[in-house]
Image (cartoon, rainbow, N blue to C red):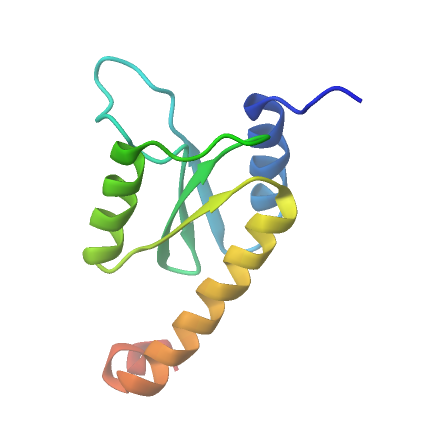
Length: 114
């Protein structure tokens, strides 16, 4: 069996996310104009920021990628590293759980949603 390439995983994840209601996904193409370590996918999931770094096989995020993910999280975003579509599904569940926690802790932030 041939190992999946990151591009193949990215296509599957983007397809899955685009099929979901309330989700917008932007595929970041690395270039000289892109900040080093920017997540592969930038998403808005029901109004919440999600940065996804995709990896295949035994690949791990680089130190600068981890720094960028932490920076987005420090700014209030949610980030994850995924090696499969199933990992992305779990990250989305974790994001949903975090949103519920935020709604309980900070009800004034969600008053306009009611």
